Every structure is written in structure tokens, then in C-alpha cells.
Length: 283
Image (cartoon, rainbow, N blue to C red; front, side, top):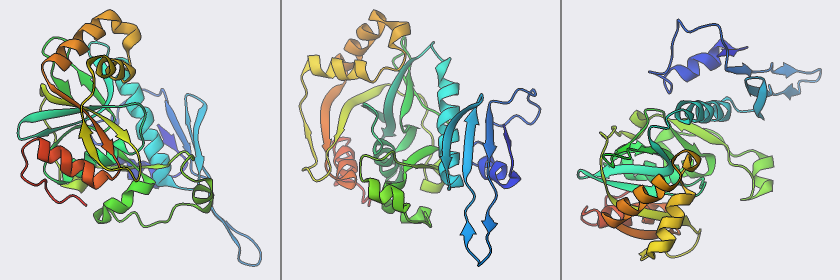
């Protein structure tokens, strides 16, 4: 990639460690225009507007380089997983607790990475925050070495990350329906560690309902299969074979729906269900 500000490239070195190739070809995938901050007559400061392009298509425009870094890493993840069709790709969080994996398949949900991050901060090992790969033969869940992408409005749960900024006025005025900016967070910042590929012991389908009572409740076989299928990102490749795999995984695991009214309560409840006495304080 290239950028008009070398400081932005340096900002990406830590979260993308292991993905950088200094001797790569001249083919450019990402281009970052970091803009220029200007001071007008009278002292008014015009903030630099950042723009990010992938293959010439603009995928971000805004004033925060943290947000732009999050959008870039999301794009890197899409590119890195798009060709991994030897796996069944699942939109899901995943952690390992006491040697047992929890798989959290979901529709697109901005709060899912924060739920995973709370579990990690409490001692769970990391598989993925939003995308994992499921081995169709061994049924093991494989994770990613990319950083987590936390929604800006969930950062208050992690004071150790020191977000250092308030949401923009535009974002606050737009309300919950606005697209949430996201910040890349390295696993090391949460004191976490990566898990080895692990066969899931539990499949839990999270539903985020702010203000509701956080609870685990049963889910029917047909609904579980439907929601698993909804979370599959390469169903067009695997087709009926994915359905057979999902049926087998659901048959051999404990399955439930998690209604998440509070992210902290949701993390505690999952830990308790995995045998962590009382859950670890998580927020």
C-alpha cells in the first residue's frame, strides 16, 4: 500500500505485523490520502480529511486515522479470507475457555467484537472477533492473526485502551443507526493470547438487544441451522455440503441463543456456562 503520510504507515506496522512484505511487487491494493491540516487567516483550523481507496474505489472518508486504519484492516481481512475456500467461512466470534471452544455465529453485529474482547480480557484464548474458518473435515475452528476491530461506542468498556477521543458530533446526532467507526485493537493490548484450532464445544447465537435482560435460552434445531446458514460467508461454494457440516456440528455441541442486553453480563454468563465459577469480572 501507499500513503501520503508516512506516519500512517508506521501506525499500521504493529497491528499488521506478520502481514507486511517489504519486498512485495509494485502492485498497490490500498492507497491512503491523509490530507493536510490548514490554519486559515484568523486562526481557524481546518482538519485534514482522510480518504482510503482499494483498487481505486473509495472505502473510507473522514477525519480520524484510527477509523481509517480500522477500515483498512477490515479490507485486509476480506481479501485474506476471500480465497480461503478450503474452509467454510463463518461470520462469528470465537474463543477457547479451559480448552473448549465457543463459536458465536451472527448476522453482522457491531457489538460482537466487544463481547469477544471481554471474554479475552477474562482469560479466554482468541480465535476470531467476526470471521473464523471452520475445517469441514476435522470440524476445528481456525482463527485469525489480524487485530480485533472494536466499535467506537464500545471502547468505554476498555479504559485500558485509552480511546482518547469523543465520538464526532455528526455521529452522536445520527444516533444508533449511523455506521459505527471501528478501531483496531491488538490482542496484546487486551492481555490475550491466540488459541490453537479447536473443535467447538458450544455454539451460541448472540442477539444484541440493548436494555433487555441478558439470558441464555434454548433454540430449536431448525432455527439454529437457519441462523448458522445465515452466518456462512461462502455458502455459494459449499452449498449442501455446508448444511450437512452445520447439522453435524450442532448435533455434537451444546446449542443456545444468547440475548445480550449488557455486553459485560453476556460475557459473564458465557464464562459461567463454560465452567468458570461466577465468571471473571469483565467490565
